[in-house]
Structures are given as structure tokens and as C-alpha cells.
Length: 338
Image (tube, rainbow, N blue to C red; front, side, top):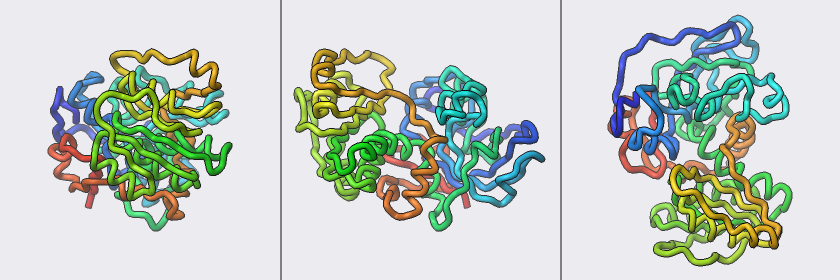
């Protein structure tokens, strides 16, 4: 549970039950820490107390009478955003904009009341509504510690490059990391898996640069003031929440290229170089990643061996050690339940 600024602890609470005949109860097997999770606890971004965790692979424990696709014992991925699958937004595959489940921070597991009060993944049981739609059968052959990393940060990195490499096969990709330790690295892994001709990764953190090199990128260690631009690329990803950094990445996007910003700007809002974007025909995309939409694609790539997410995980901890591990430094933390 998030108990207060900088505090997470175990708590005994009543076990959840099935919400209705379309819901399921799942038993988490492994949970990965999202890049936002530490900031949520340290900065008390959302009101608590609430159970933490939203990157999870689980075993189905119980299903409602109307659930057809899943049975107890099935291993499933749980997209972190809650959606119904039947509203107008879901019918057009805009699951993160579901009309049925709404919340101040977007309906999601592990965000407390700000996420709609749907429970958190570091728990004995997690209640999942609309189970036939929301739960995704986990691919065989991958360990739980890999599967749990897929539904959020890996999806975030993937969606920042996949649609644009599909439209422009073999394009070069520039990724600037920093705001979230793992998202930029997952973007590197996705770009490499999807056939980018060249992948460049820029970051001030030497460990992340080393991981990016292992994933196939040309890594550039950058510290200090931002340059006006880096060498341009057709597809760019800005994972920095420094407004000046975002401006640099935008200027590093080639004519009629696309820049996706995966960072969240809580404080100072960026001043965009709008005239340059206009004259060069740059497309800028900002949004949350759509977990239900892209998790199946990410899972297929991981199962096929093309998407090498294992290199991003830097710490695997035991389930019982969660309170200490949750706030410990790590590019990517995974909790494994035995």
C-alpha cells in the first residue's frame, strides 16, 4: 500500500470478490514497477492510501458465470488501463478513452481513487472487470518476470515507434531518454525488433546508455545544456520532461517526420517551436499509451524473440521484500512471487 509520501507497506484488507458475472479474480505472479510508480509514492501524486502496482502477469483464480475466454489456472496479462470493450471508444480501439470507466488520472489499476479505485497488483488477489475483453492470454514459453513488463512501459516504448516504422519501413530512429528509466529503452528494443535502419539513443545516465547499446542502439552520453538539435531522424521519441529537451528533440525530427513525447509534464509547460514544426511539416504526438490495444502485439514480438525486454530489467526482488524494493534505485524492478 502507498501509505504516505515516501512510504509503502503491507496491509491486511478484505479480499476482493467478483464484481459481476463478467469479472474475474486473478492472482498476481510477477509485478514490474512502472517508471511513474516511484514518483507517485515519493511525490504523493494521488491521494492514498491505495494498493500499488499495475504492470502484472497473473493466474486466473475465479471467473464470473458469463466469462467464456478464461478459466481458473490460465496465465494472463492484465492491461493496466481499465476498459469495457463495448462502448463507442472501445469499438474503435480507443480503449484508453473508454466511456464506461472514467477517473481523474484515467481508469487504471494501482492509482487508487485517482484511477477509479480498481485495486493494485502487489496483492494476493486483483479484481478485473470485463474479463473476456480485458484479460489477454499470456504467450507460452516466457517467464513471469518477462511477461509482467509488457503491459505498460514496454507498450509505451513500442507505440512510440511501431506505427511510424510500419508506415516508413527501415526509417532511422532517435530516442532521447531521461524522464522514465525504462520507456526509452523499450523504444530502442521495439525499433530494433521492427527493422529500423539505425537507432540512436541519447541519455545522461551511463547505465541506460550501456543497456541501449546491448539492445542494438548507438548510444550517446549527453549531460549539460541541450544543443539546438541532434542529427535528425525521421522518427523521434522524447522521453525527457525537460521543456528544453523536448524542443531539442522536436528540432531533431526530420522534415515531415514524427515525434512522440512519452514524458509527463507536471510542472513547467513546454514552449514548442511551432513555426519550425509548421514549416518542416512535423507531426507531434502526446498521449498515454493504450495498453489494451498494443499489449497483444508486444506480447507476440516478445514471444517470437524479436523484442528483447530482458535487458531492461536490472533488479529482480522477492515478493515479500516489496516494501524495501519498491523505492530502491533500479532502471527496471520486477517483483516475483514464488
